[in-house]
Image 1 (cartoon, rainbow over the protein chains, first blue to last red):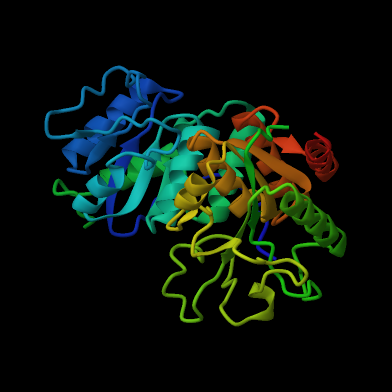
Image 2 (cartoon, one colour; image 1 turned 180 degrees about the vertical axis):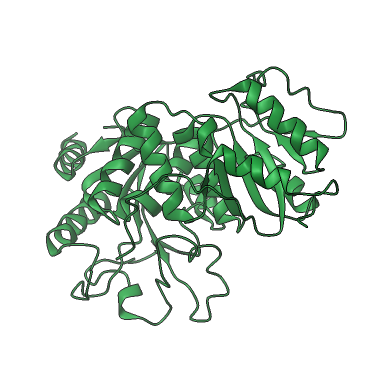
Length: 171
Length: 192
């Protein structure tokens, strides 16, 4: 039988595979921090794609630039009925870092599609909240079941970005 | 229960051959319940769609499925990969093989459900927390009503099973039903 996930605390380091694209799914527990993170990605030339739910405003302070992709999603998964996969392929992304949205809905169901499309999945757990504490934990367990390295702390994301040079490459 | 006027029964990964292998996912009791549901659906002309996860032994098609809790699984040619003995397609029932968790992913399921013109799906099989959950999520996102038969699904662990049922109920209120309720619905349809 498969291994049961008993510990779903996030890893304190982020070691992505290949090129990373950050996908912002919606509001976080700290939208000021989210804006900082997006700014840091831009400084390190890590592509950011915005995939808000159709009709839902992006959190304040993100201000997508003309060259960035905004991919509104009609359903829960950011991959269903959208151009997200095409955009990620264009960037030659191998790892998708999901940020924001509801853990058990937006993140889990976008995450499983990323997984099924063969992307390496990561999510910044500290910026997430679920529909309830019970469903938040359940979704984190489920994502760790899919990919054992999927859950990372916000400090790990910061340290990873800090370690990149300005062309977005790891030294 | 979210079974509507025009459902299809999705039998998702009800595999394991004779179910005597080590760590068999399903109990023989569940096999009997599955057989009863399949028979009831056939009698009422509710389409039965068979979904089976199969991977080539060279694992070219395994994707990221080894990056988490699972080892190599559902290998072509293994007894454990066969649809449970006593179940399986008859006549012109559709049998779809898949490489990923969701039965909708890279399969003809959308097209098949379109030809049957269904508005809801009844899901049995496993794992509750993997193929049943992600098939149910995709059905939900395609605007289908979903009913997961709680005593005819099996999880990768008890906790993961319970987690998945909570997720499915959160997606669609009323999406959980027992085999008894579904069989009663089928019987009422027969009497009508």
